[in-house]
Each structure stands twice: as structure tokens, then as C-alpha cells.
Length: 378
Ligand SMILES: *Cc1c(COP(=O)(O)O)cnc(C)c1O
Image (cartoon, rainbow, N blue to C red; front, top):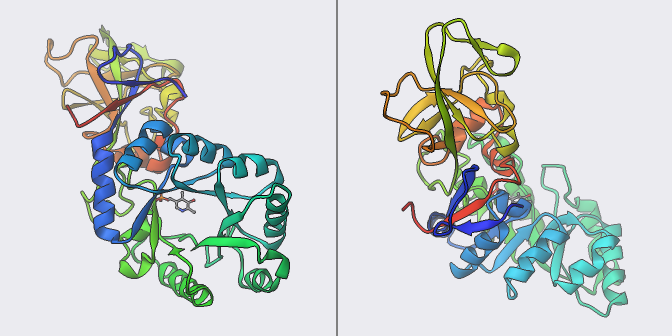
């Protein structure tokens, strides 16, 4: 990842992902208010691209004690920041991770019996306690341990040394309030829970938190809602606040003559003399190429001083061109800040135009983009 800076440091002209850590705390508190149980933070993929260290530090400061990462290597990153936290790893246990896992006291999720045996053996060889989460299958059919495997797991004497610290499962359709899968997964999970009445239990991701209290159990696992996207935003707006803003600088302003085309492929031609702004950010920074104005949905717009400017022509690696016709001649100058997504251009809007989801927008912000941390929108 690119270097992390705080806003008081000088910031160069390249695009920046500005992360508002007080908004992160606000969202954490909002989720605590809704869930009324432990809110664990999912910080896989460098905390959804926002930057592992400041995000984990901030959440620890807000009282968060439990973290989930995708890989053991990510868990080790969390451990270095949060020495006292409980850290679970979503990836199935594989032998090559054993040292990383035990040296950092990380708890893997177990998904089948042979994996549990390998894990138990790896712990025994190292003289360590084997502690893990049991991730049961309730209907998403990706990694969960099915009923039969759970029976085998429970009856296998050699696996008794594994201490299960969490019973968990994962919802497939929680972003759809109407999906019947939610209730059927809930019922499946309740069935498993009867077998493990004393275990802490967790079913809900961000979207699941808002499905109602029966989905909360002892712990919810939130990622995207902490970072400012509510998966039900179309039906119920404004429950969480934006945390991340991708901004860039206006590099040049020019007027292009009628009949001239702009950008690679000469895909757009100016009908009249057109004032254009060249923005210093492109697909290497996370502005998907699909956002160029060739698609059926029309162009994505960026925001400059609170006014919208449509992307004009193709998205290049380091540049986009925007139409400044709507702006008065002196209203914007080179060096002006351009918001790609944030408080004005919502990440949901950008994701929709790019035919993807906010998760992918966040995790596609380029590795060369410095993450800049602020405390409050000031
Ligand atoms: C990524 C992930 C989460 C967090 O999901 P969000 O929708 O970002 O809240 C929770 N549980 C599992 C198993 C995951 O893989």
C-alpha cells in the first residue's frame, strides 16, 4: 500500500483517499445501537482498502475487541496493531499458515473434519492450544461445515482438544430484505445452535444487522457498514455516514474546438467549443474504465466545489477528462479538488454506473493512492 499520512502533512498532487476516522467511530456506535450485542469488525483486504493500521487503531480505541481478517497474513497485521484483540481468520486452515497463525494467536474458521484434524495436529506439534471458530453451512454453500461433518466433528475423540470459541455462519442474501433465504438460513443456524448452547454465536454481516434482532445472537460481524455503505440504502437511507472520499486534482483546463475528439479511441467529439478539465486520476487509481461515457447509462459525474461535471471520453490510466461547460469561466482553476466519490458523489452511485458494488469500488482504489486520515470533515 502507499504511505499513510495525516492531513496536517503536506499532500502531493496525486489522488488521495481521505478517510474520516470520526465517521468510522460514528458508524461503529450506530451499529452497536442497532445490534445491542458485540460488534466485531471485519478488516479483510486492508480494511476494505481504507488502511489497516488507522482503522484497527481507531476501532480498538472505540472499544472493539474482535476482528475478522481473510488470511492469516492479514491477521498478523491486525495482531501487530491490536495486541489484546481476538482475531479470527476466514480462510480455511492450511498447514503453511500454521506458524503465522499460532505465533500471532489467530483463530481460524474450521470448515471440514480433515482441516480440523490438520489444525489439531499442528497445534499439538507446537505445544499450543487449538482455538477456532466453527463455521457451519446454512445455505450459502461456499465454505461452511455441513451437518454430517459437524456430527463427525463432535464424535471424533481426537478433535476434543480443539476449543471452539465461536459458532458462526454467513448469510447469502442479507442485502435483500425480501429474500426468503434469510429466514431459512436463520432457522438452520438456530438448529445448529441447539447443539452448541454454550457457544458464542454469530450470523450477521452488515446487512444482516438490519434484518432484525433475531439475527444478532451474541456477535455481529460488520465490514462495509463501518466503512459507510448501508446495503439497504435504496429502501432505508442515511443509517451510516460516508467514511471514505476519493479525491483528485484538476490538472489543466482547456477549450477544445468544435469537431475535435477527446481521449483514446476518439470516442467523443465536441459539438461546440467545449471547456474541459483534465483530472489527475484514472483507472490505476480506482476510477473504473467502465465509467467513461460510452456506456448505455450515460456518463458518471464527478463533483467540483459541490457542482457536478460529467466524465467526457474514455478513462485513461492516470487521467480523466470532464466537461466544465456548466461552470462559470473563473469558477474552477487548475489545482481544484475533484471528488470521485465521497459525501457528494455517493459510492453507491459510482458502483451502480460501473455495474459493481461499493465493496469493489473501495477495494479497487489503487495501491499508489495515499490514504489520508482526518478526524471530522474539516
Ligand atoms: C466479508 C465478510 C463479512 C463482512 O461483510 P460486510 O457485508 O462487509 O459486513 C462477514 N462475514 C464473512 C464470513 C465475510 O466473509
